[in-house]
Length: 204
Image (cartoon, rainbow, N blue to C red; front, side, top):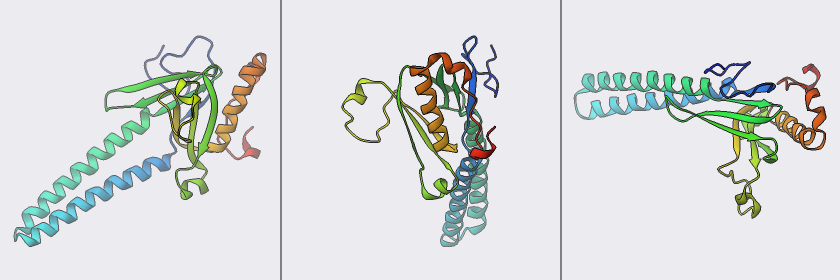
């Protein structure tokens, strides 16, 4: 078994387990995160430049601001790109397997079998993402915390949330289909086709 996750295999994959779809954050989410980092770097540089004009040591503050801004931009790019690369989830014929980066060196694997899943919810984080068909998919687990439903929309510790997913509504419907087939018509699981993130007419 490979120690590295790929499009065709993942760490901990069971013998005979069929991958139906690999979920990765949409590339636009990386662009947006990098844009925020560069804005922060620019803001630091501007603040240092303004301080330099106030303290009559402009050149020193400009140089310091530039160095700090470059460090923020370079380090931020490396960290965010690395996190995005390791942020993966696998929808298989047996479960949902999620690999969530927690630090630069650690990735937290979490698994929910279809037996443990009770429902799926989808939502866009904002209006722009909604127009681009990018949103979040929350797979709710059967847990005691879910029984009272104290706060609607709450994500419990056992739930798995997939963020910035392309065609998020269609993926939510696809997972619903898997749940129905797995629980009501288990013999038909072998016939479930992989999910394709394209418009309906172009999927097969």
